[in-house]
Image 1 (cartoon, rainbow, N blue to C red):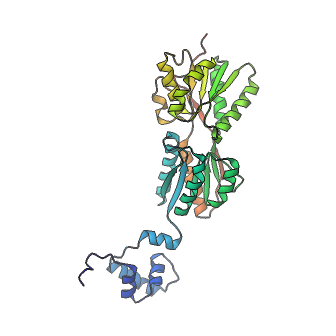
Image 2 (tube, helix red, strand yellow):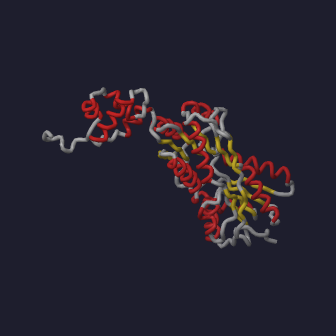
Image 3 (cartoon, helix red, strand yellow):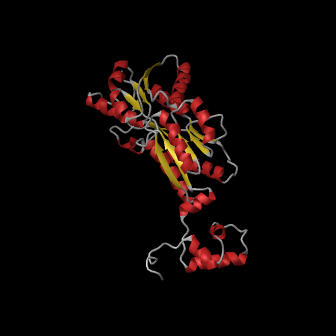
Length: 336
C-alpha cells in the first residue's frame, strides 16, 4: 500500500473501482435500491465487506432526503413539564431509530418561527410544543413546517395535535376549593400569550357562571418559580383564601414566599398548582394539583409524527388529555 494511505478512510470510490461499477451503483446498493441487478449488487456488497467500507451516515441521509431526526421546539426548557414531554418524545422516537433536536425559545414568541424553520431544515419533521405565537402567526407558519405535530395548540392547518383540557382541570381545582368552604378565590395567571392560560381563564369563567356566590380575582403572574414568588404580595392583598396558581412552579414559588411571610398553608390560605411535576409531592406541605400525563403526551406526539413520516393514517389526529386532581396537604378547610 502506498505511503500516506494507511490511515485513509475507505470511500465509495474505492468500492466502485474494485467492484468495477459506477459510484451511483454503489450508492444505490448501499441505500437498498433493488433496481440494481442481483449479481452486481452482491459483488458490490462483497467488496464493501472486504474493504470494511462504512457509508457516511450524513451523506446517506442527504441522498435519501432523510435525517432520521425530528425537531422539538419548546417555550422553556427549564420547565419540568416540557422536560417530561421531551423525554416522552425522545424515548419513543429512539425506539424507532430517530433522534431529537431540541430548540428553546425562552418564552420569546418572535423566536419561535425562526427556531421552528431552522429545525425543519435540519430535520424530517417538527413538534411544536405550546407555542406562544398568535393564532394568525401559527396559521401562517404551520404549512411551511410539514410534517408538523402541535402540542397544546390547534390550527385550521391539517396537522395533528395533542391538547390538555386545562379548562376542565382548573374547574375541578376550583370546585375542590369551594367544597372546602372557600368562597374568595384568586387565580395567579400565566403568561398572557399562553394558549393554556387562555383555556384556564375560559374554564374559570364557566365555573363562575355556575357559582354566583363565589368571588374570583384574576391576578398577574407568570410561569416560573420566580413569578410565583413575586406574586405573594398581590395574592395576600386580594384577601382570597383559595389560590389557584397557573402551574406547579409558580405555586411552589408562591408557597415559599408565603412561608417567608409567616402565612400558614393551608390553615390561612389553600393553594393549588397544575401539572403534577416530579417535585409537587415533596414541597412542605405537598402540593394539591391537577396531574397532566406529560410523558404520554410526548409518546403520542411521536406516534403522530411517525405516522406522518410513514404516510400512514393517524387513528386520532386530535387527541385530548384530561387532567385529574391529586389532593395533598396544601389545601384544607377555609379559615373561619
